[in-house]
Image (cartoon, rainbow, N blue to C red):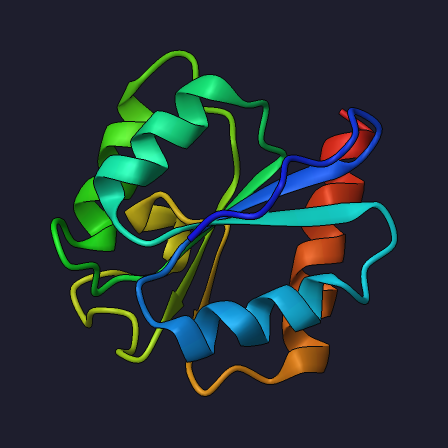
Length: 135
């Protein structure tokens, strides 16, 4: 499932998410952010194709994907020169692994657990998009 590609002035967000309910919820959340458009990748393979083809401002990452886990996908993105600077927010039903002190240790700009609070999600997305716009 992917959405039509938005105009070039928008902030494009890629969401790696295989659950249609969670994907629809995040589409609704992102629709409240001016200038933000979201594209859904239902698995890692599709996500990698999309991230190579488009200029994303932010990636939202489910941890439990059908083909790879979100930790591995994020590590691959952070190791590739063309995607390493795209901020990634983990959006997961599982808490941050105890082995890590903070989300940045895992390559994430933030780690948000499900069920997602819409206001907190909007605030996290806007903070990263605004920071990105000023760098």
